[in-house]
View 1 (cartoon, rainbow, N blue to C red):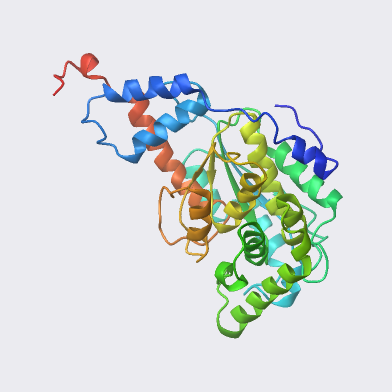
View 2: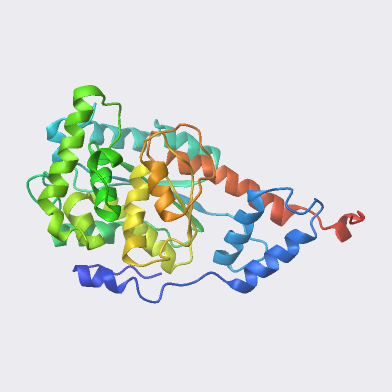
Length: 339
């Protein structure tokens, strides 16, 4: 996979052409193998579906995950100055330092499931513009952030998880989801880091103000990302798009990651066929967003941390699916009579 540098929105749009499709023969072979494993048909439930899905993207009837990668993108948002988060903007840089020191939840989960963890801070000293007053990013900003995401995917990665850190980014994700799928600001805006009462009302008003200001341009998914998104959302979109070009399966994290990924699906139907929903987060609108994408989460544990944490837990489910599918004996190999 080469790493192009996107210079314009047209360069980005060109990357949606000729997206690789899953290997139908590998899927059929995986299903044939599943049919003769030492278990009743369908006994492993959705794990069987996950294994066949992975087979299609890896082109093997015995898929495996040898080099999973978690990438956390961090950025700052101008809209955070409006008090839309329970934490101040400087926490973004502080948490980046925590990631780099190994002290965050995602560090522990990456270690637990044998994943490589990379952290990319994106111009933390240059927040996006306040989206209620101007587009969050210029075209150059958007192209640079998506290029950073594209380049962050390791050459040997065989499964990708994108996480994020950015005070104010649930506000951006809510505005982006509303821009992509319509609906009222309050339908998409949740507690995020824990705002409630008047603070939540102000957050909803902020999302509405951003949607009103940019209404005329929001029918274009990439323009929606540029105007009401953020650098870390754009970087996640770029990474997930590169993964598709490299036939690398993706596990989506929570509301913010899913909103970023939804830009790709709105730009081209089927662009997220290589992505599973890792979990259902406690952010209220996440379920509605997954429903729009037609994706059922692998787990639902009430998580709302971000960082890629929910997807990292779901990585364990994918690993379990592949261990059973690729490692179990067939009836013939085990000398067990079929029913």
